[in-house]
Image (cartoon, rainbow, N blue to C red; front, side, top):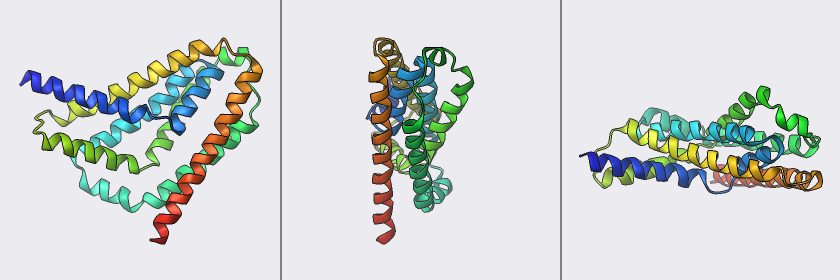
Length: 210
């Protein structure tokens, strides 16, 4: 029994890492903030996504059908809100002045904002919940006897470990880059975030027209 629980927890841990690791808007923001403001800013950004992943993981693990159905019905407005939020963040990045070294060292007041922003951004993408439903459905089909809370904990820790690693590595490397290089990353990140937003709008338009 203990070995079965350990295997299920390891699977959930891997799921958390695999969902967090692909480069997307959250990964891009984590990299950019780690470069501009240090590892604490990057970690706060990633942890917002980790908490959202845990929330969606809990819905999938516990099978909260009424909430899942409600979010499925609200997929279009949630997605539109997320796209608008991405465009706003892209504009903020494009127009923001490059952070000075002093600003990079003093980000304590912004950590909560970074966390909340990515929490909202991740929660505004209800497609994520269907990924967790498929994953936990597969685990159930394998005969997993692990309690749902253990699977949710594994997902959260896997996601959090990825963001901790990414922010630490990028934050350490950030000190080696000069201002012009960091400005290029900031502007490039803004363009990619805008591209993600436009792609999401296109997906929603196709969904509405069906």
